[in-house]
Image (cartoon, rainbow, N blue to C red):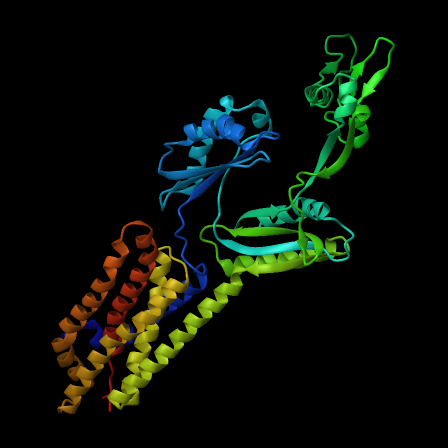
Length: 494
């Protein structure tokens, strides 16, 4: 211990402690904050719609071909399927923990493409959507009409056009789901009138498809002697109710035309009439905002709230945002309790140390050791890719009782040497450290060995408790460094 750099270069020892604390403080402010660590396995959802089909038909013609194509995708564990009588199809594919969700979505998309040729034509027209599912909900909000001037369909359509695109552009937002009906063109056929003309629904579908489409109409004057060439324009798909009413279904020999308005009622209605949405008795629509992996929940919620404030002056009169639930409600309550426990534990440890050492100056060293080791732990948590959550904070609470042990052992050994007649603090520290260094390091390794095996637990539990074990082990390990760097003084501790 004669050439111990921490004893001979006490300024550098203090500088090391300051650097550890400073780096840890910087990393603490940059850590993503969430209530629980993200341990849910990556999931990919495949959805489509087969309008007019019953659940049994959907299972045979849509779900079964998709399941056979998706089955066996790399890193897949299992999948679940559901089909409703309204024609909705949903297949959720679960993957192993740690699988890249973007790569998983691409692999599933490739498998779905193979099965597209085996799906009914009505399904391929609608399309099959493949997207990542987000599990962490940042906010559950709603937009409602306070005065009842607008119905829930208008509110849902307003969210899809003006609110959802802005939310999706916020950094940290993974997905936005609106639980409402948007506008759709509804054609209500009259069966009795169609029977009189001998028409079937397929005749109406064929007439709409033949008169409402997008086409390249070409150009005029390409091979003529004219100096100009004109590109022809076609109005494309029909857009207004009047245009759909004028669709011709049949012509007679006398020149009479049978229009769509003669056998059906055309109107702008809702996409679905399966439910009605009300918020506090007023027409409205609920929407959910999901968190992107690794995002800071509190910062993203602040950006979302700022966006709502920006949108308020531009909204139609009578519309207002309602915040139903936010992750900050649970996050601040849970983390606040843990931080309170953390502070109380630090105070109790300092009081206990002062009670037994009966020396204020000697009590400062273990107290500083707690601060340095806990702040330094945040740097390791950041390097490991963890977040600041209840589990990591709880690990810090448990680590307080162990991180102070090393500093107490060193201080107690130095004080014992000085009370036995050694007046020089450096000499007393050298002799004390020559006796307790091995004990300090070995005790630190024992403490770390208790918690490190937790990080190697298999399955989801191992993924969950990895943050717990690494946080405690790193805190205890840094306590050894803090004890060695902070327990050097020029003057005796008396």
